[in-house]
Length: 219
Image (cartoon, rainbow, N blue to C red; front, side, top):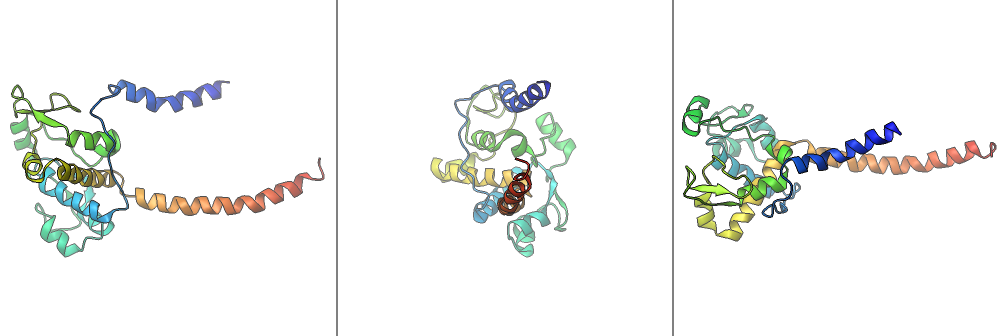
């Protein structure tokens, strides 16, 4: 009985965590991501480097890993996606020094490597698409998902240029990349998982007949 209660508590933990995090938000929407879409991931990587890494780092991700996983040739990676180093084996660090960032923003901008894994794809996508004008805030903007956020809307020019629909597609690409970045082994794990399940299904057949043969004389 105690074991059953323990398992039940563990199963309820994600629900309790969501409730503790503030419950339902009417602006939270499903993120239209596709981890198998390499082109989307490539576009997302470009948006991330060009817009997010001005202030944020991804210190647990290396340029070389991105280049390999997303089928981006090393030279193209160096020419178009590497602005703070010329070594492809380096981690993805922000262009702005930490002390200067703290002076400008009052705190160091958080590292973004794992944010999609911690917050979830839906949260990231909804956050990126839910800035709105607010003259009471220091940067003139606020966010429906993260109220009183201290970050400026750095993608506002892109939003104005692309229009709502295209901007949402671009944010889906960025979210897609950030989900990949938070767990780069995910695609490989899922690929291997399919073969493991097939193996277990095949293994079940001889095990079933062996079990029946073993128990037939006992019954």
